[in-house]
Image 1 (cartoon, helix red, strand yellow):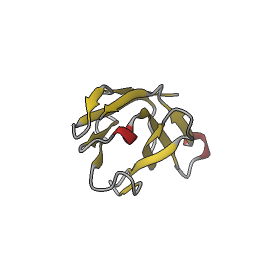
Image 2 (cartoon, helix red, strand yellow; image 1 turned 90 degrees about the vertical axis):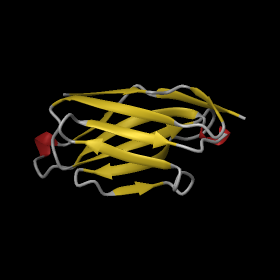
Image 3 (cartoon, helix red, strand yellow; image 1 turned 135 degrees about the vertical axis):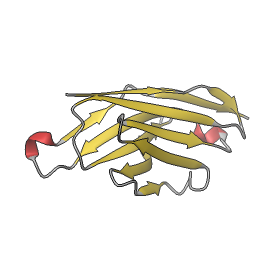
Length: 121
């Protein structure tokens, strides 16, 4: 079983920066995708950024050029460096691990509890 714990959420002013972390514990199999999602009040959860085991990345258009996703496979930690934050970035940010191993017993989809990011204008 895998557990994900996010940290780093806070309240900041527009234009500020934050770094979110997601620590995975347990049996983390590869290959996998690690994702950051966010959900604002009254809105659906949306995919913000993805990073593969091989460090390929993808971003939502709304955060390109402002957010950077990274990971450390040695300690199963993922990061989201957020800069030039806007009020519309306000949301609960969730860490997700999606294991896509060829071994069915290794596959799984895991979520953290979320961390609040609030950006004030």
